[in-house]
Length: 171
Image 1: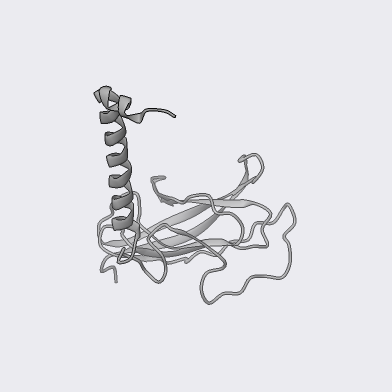
Image 2: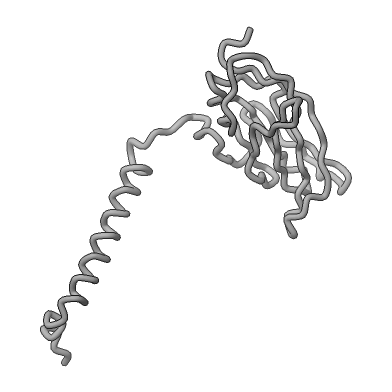
């Protein structure tokens, strides 16, 4: 039988085990505080959070697109709060697509003000925060929607969709 009392004669080992245990407990407490009950949530999900299924209020198609077709849903006139926060982009990659979808929102001068994560088919993002802060107003822009091969991650093509960003009290 092993004599565990001999471990107490090695204070550096005991200190390391105690520090490791304290670190794990601190990480667990922080995780619970941030993600546990009472964590901030939204019915539509956090800004930029990818969700499964179609955008609320829309139904999925019952067909599969061919290799030359890319379907998407996107609000053509998304409204954002002051500075470009919490805008209803409602970007969807419908389940009929063969490709993943990634979108960049570009102003007329070419400045990219938002880049989405890659969306697999049958997923969407409701609200987003722009990557660049914009003054209140209306901004002509375009969405560059990339078709991404799910196997290789290679961009196989893209489409451009004109949109208009409305920031703050833009009337």
